[in-house]
Image 1 (cartoon, rainbow, N blue to C red):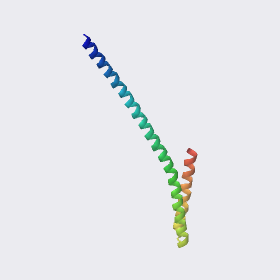
Image 2: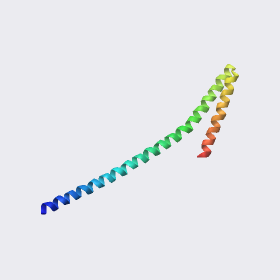
Image 3: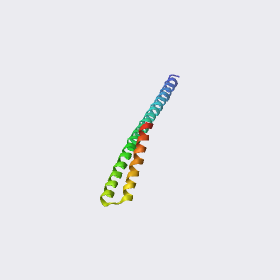
Image 4: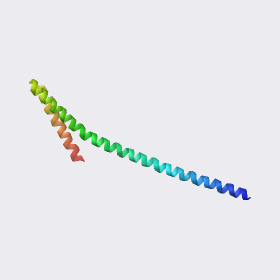
Length: 96
């Protein structure tokens, strides 16, 4: 009878430890998912802002090249690119 009680007590302790391990694993898994999703969100947020600035800088380079080579249509493409990217950047900043 004594061995049965010890066996049942050990079995109960093992079940409790398994439950605690499952709870902690679930907690760690959720924390990792949340931190990864936050990191992705912040990374994409900064990347979008930089993308507009790089595009505007590229358009300025196109305007400079077209001005020096007297290519009118390329100049206007650069101007339209700057205007559209500036508007997108302003909209992005207002939404934020």
